Image 1 (tube, one colour):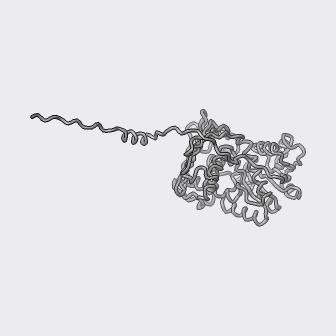
Image 2 (cartoon, rainbow, N blue to C red):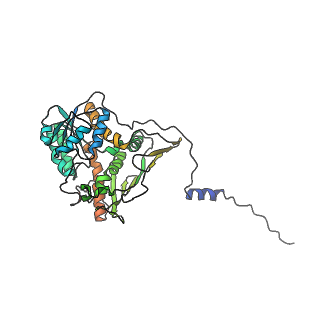
Image 3 (tube, helix red, strand yellow):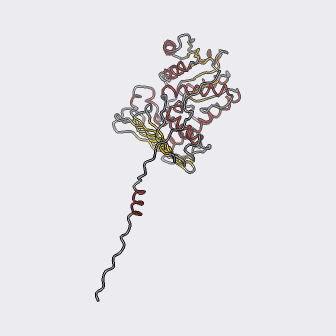
Length: 398
C-alpha cells in the first residue's frame, strides 16, 4: 500500500510579523491626551521692583532692555565705554536713565541694587568683582567665565557679600526648553534616559564682527545654551551628573567665517546619554530638533528655527501637544532677570545662579578640550579653556 503524505499544519507568521515589526521600529499610533499645565513662563516678583543698571550696551542688549521694558522693570542707569551706545539705548527704551562711561560711578550709587553686566568675558571679570564688592546683585552675561576657579571665587565673593549672582542663560526660558525642563522637574518623563539636540543654521553673520575672532565660537558662545540645557535637565532629575564627554569640531566646506562651524558632543551620565550636534554652516533649510526621553515618557520639539517650535509629549496616556506661548528673544531675557529678582525677594538661590552655571561650563570646557585633544574628558577636570580659544580682549560690548 502506497504511503500517503500527511499534510502539515501551516506555520503561523504572527510571531515573525511581531518580530519584524519590532525590528523595523514600527509602533502603534498613540491616542490623544491633554498636555499638563506647567509653569514654564517667566514669573515676576510679587512686590520687589529695584532700580537696575545695565553695563555694556552692545547689540544684544536691545533684547535685554526690550524685555525689561515690557516687564515694567526700572532701568535707571546705562553705562558703556562708548557713550553713544548708552545714549542710543536710552533713547530707544529708557529716556530718563542716567548715562555713564565709568562703571565705578554706577557702583557708587546706593539707590541701584541690581546690575546687568553685558560685556564680553575678558572685560566683564573686573566689573563682576567690583559690582559684588559694592554689594550689588548681579546678572552676568553668558558665558560666565573663562575658567572654573575664577567662577568659584566669584560665587564665594557673592556669598561673602550676601548678594545674588546669576547668569544670563536666556535659553532656559525659551518656551520649548523651559517646558521640557519643567516636565522633567515635575516627573512627567520619569528618570532621564536620553537628551538629544540638533541645530542646523547659518552662523556666517559673524564675519566682520569681533565674534569671528573666537576660535571656539560654536561650542563656547553659542552651544553654551545647549550645555546649560543639558545640565539643567540633569539637575532637575534628582541632581544627576555627567560622567564623560566626547566631542569633535571641523570646518564646513565653503564656510566664510574663520572659526570651525561644525561641532558635536556626546555626554554620558549614569543610566543615560546626551548628544548635541551643531551645523552652523548651513545656508538654506534651517532646522532645530530636540528629543528628551525618560522612563515614563518622551518630549520631541521641532521647528525651522529656535523661535518656532512645536512640542509633542508622549506618555502612557497618549500624545499631547502643548500650545506654548512666548518666544526666546523676549521671554528668555525676561526670564533670567525675573528669576534673579524673585530669588532676591524670596531669599533663595536663583535657578540660573552662577554656582549652577559652573556645571554647564564644566560640560562646555570638557567638550572643547575633548575636541582639541581627541580624547574623552571628565566634566570638572578641565578647569579652563585652552589658550587661544577666545580673544584676550574684544573691541565691543555685547
